[in-house]
Image 1 (cartoon, rainbow, N blue to C red):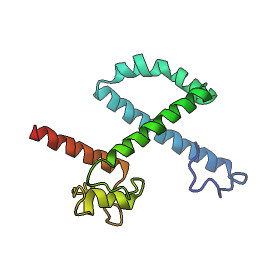
Image 2 (tube, rainbow, N blue to C red):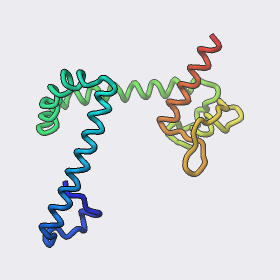
Image 3 (cartoon, rainbow, N blue to C red):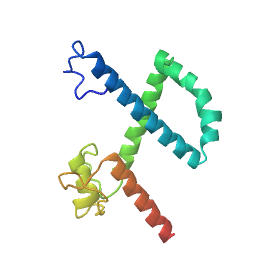
Length: 159
């Protein structure tokens, strides 16, 4: 793959053959260097048998799935989607049973979640493990997962 700064504005039609050859040679060189580095790490970690016995034989199946797609039952997909929707609604309803969550709170609102988890005096008053680029407490999925792990760890310590 020839590397160019901006493929949308690059003038492919008027590119010289020598520039094309030089670019392809550079791409091939760096691809080979990367391959050798990764292959060395795989061997170093003792994963070469897993790669050769498990992953390599499955590549043709995965590439075929990538190329052709997968057969999916639309009816079954709708049923599963509905089940997940109902489950999420039930889980959200369970959260309103906590005294810290008011019925007027919108759990889909980042501002309300920040207030419930971190800033509200009658809220959970947790310490935010991460902040956004603007300095606000984060309620992004990875942060909430980290917060849950911290809570579970604390509960284990307390017995």
